Length: 473
Image 1 (cartoon, rainbow, N blue to C red):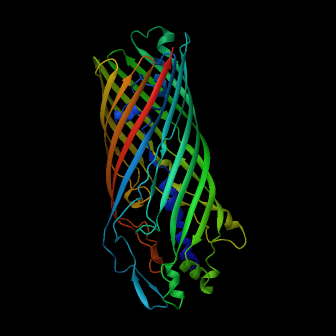
Image 2: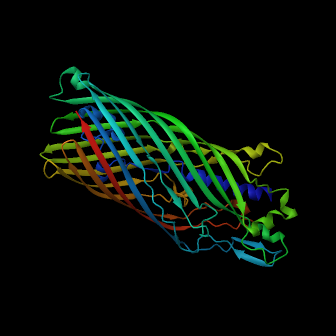
Image 3: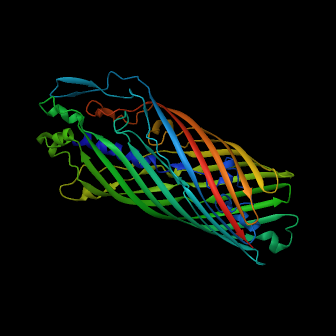
């Protein structure tokens, strides 16, 4: 019986922690970028270049400031597969009833919850030096998923959220200005440091209904518990970038950001409904199943090295056409080694476990964007992008039902004498089928009645970005 519940907790930590290790790698860090489906790596006319390509800030004069926010509202629909396996059953109440394990029977929608990642950028060009400095703060890894407490997959996940705050000071060197050929070719490089603060929140129900087979009463039904794990971490990384432009014809850019190791630590809390408490008090289980009220937990999550490359055609007056590629190497997220403090205490809890394998791969995105200056004050934008998930079919689960994604965007900006305001909207659409054994714990199926929540997961996400900018010469 101890092994049964150990497998339960292994599953709990695997899904909860793994679900947000990469999370949604967001590229929407400024309204101009959102309006162009993120095709901004080869652009040098907005201070959000600090994120997309910090080498391009050499083309911004004086002191440049920008503050903004992106409203993110995802709708996630779950349509159950409804293909129960007759072999997956469990027995309760001293063998009086055989119950079919729920592998995906009831449709559900994730809770509607909005998110609001923000961005702040500052850049300053030091006169007559060929040097520009900048600083940015944004949330490139984040968002979350919240499911109802009674849905099919509640024993896989009920909530998961990761938020990262990346502080990025950068220094850019204008090689073309220093070498005296800027009229013919713009060329600059940049280096920066990334200081990351991350918070994580992960929740799941614990299935104790198997314990009902040890209780001689039909009144103990729906024995469940809950776990909520919260934690935070600080990490460090670096970034480098390159920008080049043939004036009024063609621009190219590239940016590389290192992977970042986040040693998350925090507290896991446990609580149980009345039926769950009845199961835990049963003498047959008390010695093999030990849950503390709370305990400390630790796990290191490796955010991926990621890079973007872009090209922009500038040969038509007032029009910019841009093409970008984004790549994130989620291979760094290959396994998790979770440790709980209570394992080393007396009596030891049932939370000791081996490292957990994840096997994520590479995520990449291609974006096409267009920007047209209608007149000196008004600019219109549009774009299309498609991205591919790093999660293999075998480990896909409902905390992050990710798949190939289509992004459609448009936006506009209005510019004054020393200020501008930009708006960008993006619609993201993706759908994936979960048909795997996440939620199935091997040869213990007949004792663990939690289900796989197999079915179709459809996501429709709306993003609306607002950026306010000002400059001083």
